[in-house]
Each structure stands twice: as C-alpha cells, then as structure tokens.
Length: 113
Figure (cartoon, rainbow, N blue to C red):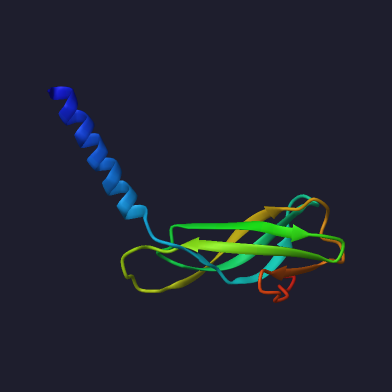
C-alpha cells in the first residue's frame, strides 16, 4: 500500500512540473546573424520574451545560393508582462556561409551582424 501512494505522489509531481513548463512553441523573429567560432556555424540573434523558457533554431535547407533558418520560442502558459530580450542561438551548416544569402522560412533576408 505504501508503494502505491509513493507512485501516485510521483505521478502528481511529474504532472505538476509538466503543467508549469507547458506553453506553446511559437515562431520567433530572427534579427540578424553572425559567423560562429567555427567556419560551419552561424549565431542567430532571436527576439524573445523575458518569461520565455526555451529557444531553438534549425537550418531548414541550404544550397549554393541560400540558407533557410527557423527559430522558435516556448511561451509560458500563464499571461506575463512581455519584456523583450535578445538571445543568441547557434546552428550548424554543411559548409561555411560564404556568399550565400541567409533567409527565414518566410523568405525574409536576415542581415549579417
């Protein structure tokens, strides 16, 4: 009997933690990019909110002319004051950026920092 209450307690704690972290992943605005430490790395500057919990970015596609990137931010479930901050998120490339254009998934050119 004692073990069953422990398992139920652990499940309730896990559910509570998941509910706190919840929120939705929304597309994030990519403001600019810089070349990273290595030749095949870009550092994206992404607009985020102070209460946002997680930022991620990925290379959607890349060819000899362009690199298409996407960034997302996980928003909190509860309403909070929206304070804008900027975070740096690295992404890896197959080849150095060179003369290629860097664009977001909507085709908007992202300026080099």
